[in-house]
Image (cartoon, rainbow, N blue to C red):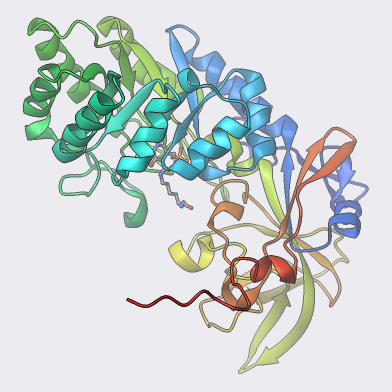
Length: 426
Ligand code: LLP
């Protein structure tokens, strides 16, 4: 298979679905279900594919931590030479725990708090991707109070059309993200005049699960227009062109643009500017490297529909319910025969489903199902809704696997709730 391979790390061995050299039922026997299982090899392969494609220019891959913030995943990517893109103090904490240094970190996000800016500056991060004039002014003040100069990239909204779910479009006119294009120059000039800010880059992130090149090309061109003007005006410290993440992966049979096509489209533009390229991929690196393994609890029929009720719910994998997202569902050990069913979770909401009216391999109660392409925006978007403990996370390397996040226990559900809260008077 070519790029965007859905099979990343997963294959059938004697009919049984395995992640690298480990059958998924062997993992379920140890880790229980539901469990997220990641292929270290698949993450490595995706990283190398992207970094090879970008090799002709000076670049840095800053993995977007929000896609999968497991320390095991972060450590793996760090060992490959990646930096990170964070969006919160919590992600900064995780990144540091995984061993990333300040110079490996860029900080995006439309609502950074003063405390988070302070923490980021104290950590000596590479860039704060500033998304509004107010944030810029706050950052200047915070940096001043620390006796520091904050390295800033302005996140500009390049106002291009993108073709993805409207919840994950971020670079169109009127979005909450970035500085409106027509204000970007004025904001950059403001930054240039500030005592505690150094304008070091321009940045965009136009959306997620993007499969066309044109919006990237147009967006980069808009950033470079700004760069040309600012350079003429003496912006000597401008070094970075951060073009965000968004590269799509295969969920079903679609074949998104590959890393090489992406590189061919943007590299010539960036190379001509002399700027150093930064990309912030999340899904591309981990999306297809993960699978959610769940067990069939019950089968039942209702109103002419077949239901397969599994032990993973919308609290474990929110994407189908939240975006109507498609994830392939396969039997770990197919029995032969097929079935058209709604594959649903145990949560008390009709919107708790993994697949509706889907043709799948026949499964019986007790069987294991694999829900594919769950490596990005899976575990990280899980919750304790219905007081369901969060699933375990497992990393596979060749013939070996390890539980890298323990399944939550009931005690974890109540650990922040004292039996006797301290009441205070107003
Ligand atoms: N950089 C910034 C500033 C971002 O906001 C994001 C994602 C990325 C990079 C990485 O995007 P990626 O390469 O993964 O597409 N929960 C949604 C996706 C939300 C993406 C939010 N921002 C989903 O499950 O599809």
